[in-house]
Image 1 (cartoon, rainbow, N blue to C red):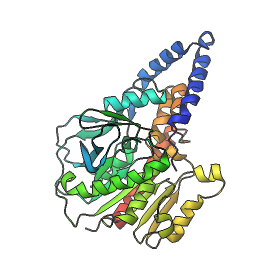
Image 2 (image 1 turned 180 degrees about the horizontal axis):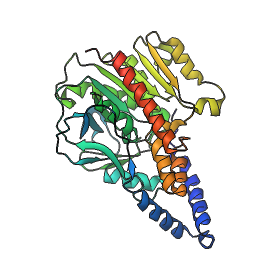
Image 3 (image 1 turned 45 degrees about the horizontal axis):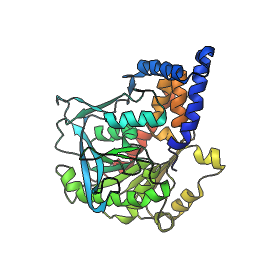
Image 4 (image 1 turned 180 degrees about the vertical axis):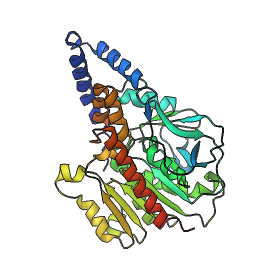
Length: 373
């Protein structure tokens, strides 16, 4: 399910901003400048207060950023080899004296806030991650992470950090030409939304292949026997399932509310598969996703599934908590967040509970099917 709402949300956001201004001041009903100034003030109240919930595992979490280069494909924007911004999250020693890592880079944050109509600073987030912290020597395996269509993979930080705190190394990456904004090694910025979701799928699956090939370079101590699996949200989940079918290096995959695509739907797989679903199929279609049902009928290996009908599609992102936190500080800003990233999470308690359930599902799945030590 690829429901990133950037394009459709812009018109709705403009209407929402107008409504916010009208509610605050009848005199400023049609004054866009006053509306923007009002939201900027409210954003200042939220700035620095959005936090990714602390992971529950025994390890601190470190991160370092790099690029995975695919020399076989030339990016149409840069006319250089395709370069995937890649983050390696890992269990770190708590004695590490490291600076907090940004949730989004300055360029990506500014651009994303602008495209979505968010006030400046609305996506200031405490990630709880330490940049270049000293890694622990031992880890349990490697998990690849792919985000939803157009979304930065940073939007899945709550789940990523939980798994890293439990001893896994996570290799998370964005997809050029699709992710809202992708930075390149030479400083070039590639604006996303240039590929429709259908056209974006095949390049994503190839991205996974290149990342798998680079794991010995990306992950210290990586060996041929190191367990490797993958998970993702939305199209990232669909990508994980198709990659599991195509690339024997993957032991298992989890799809968080993504409509399956590719040959895996009809051919299935013998490898373990996990599936979590939101209320979207039931509410908007009236019955379970028929493509997902077809996939499940063709799976020949172990599988685990869980329905979370209390949340919507972006309830499988950090916004399941961000939205109610923003709303608690300013209902208008919370409405803007929910318009762009629908979660159906109405309270902070509901957001925390949703994240806890998803974390536990992923931890249990990886413990059961991937960690062979």
